[in-house]
Length: 283
Image (cartoon, rainbow, N blue to C red; front, side, top):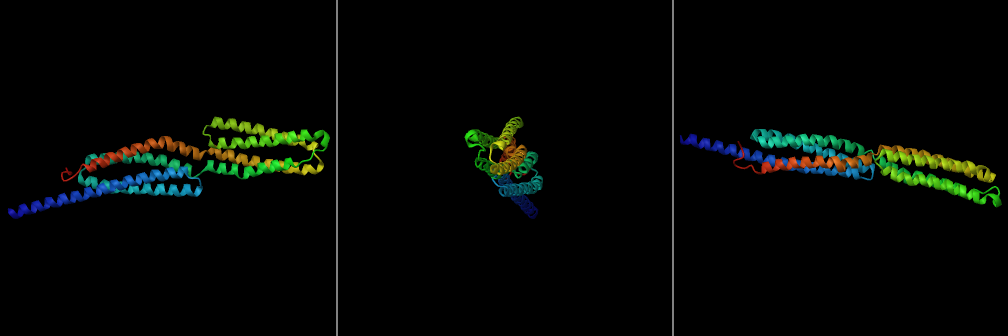
């Protein structure tokens, strides 16, 4: 009887040690799960805020890697909790799994938009090639010489100033268009740009007979520069209309913050429940 009793006590001790070992594993995986979820959210935010395509892609890759690590810890936890018969912890983990699925769906949309970087690309076009075309337009017009200096000088100057000013008006509208999220407001800006383009082309047409023959080559160069500028402007408008940076930022600041909060609450409740377990933790 003594031998049987000793064997029973030893078996109980082994069961307790095994349960405590699995509890320690569960706590380790829960901590790692929380760390990886935090990393995933932070990397996704950096992808949204990145100022280059390369950085956006790299941060998006980091976010995806961290989400895979979250899933790996979930997969490791589920059989441990089942073996320990931890029904409450299993319920709390499943609650997180459900909320994490919603997070992944939203995060996938956000990262997909962020790596397109259409607003950033539009901004670079506006401040780079479009600026150069607008400056070329100005330089070509400012070099024209009136046909009759005594009669046409101020009229030519006024027409040149009007043409340059209207192109600058289009440039000024590009930046707020890139930053705008409202389609109606963007459409209103585009209408103003079209009006300015019409005024610029009208000024060029009027200038034709008022400048010396040698200056007509300058007018032709200015026309080419305006055509180039407007072609670039159309590209800028198309990229701006995609609005991927603005849309990803809005989703991150609004919808995603709510989903992250829900996931964090589930994780904290799960970890608190595990923390209460000990020698009497199995049932």
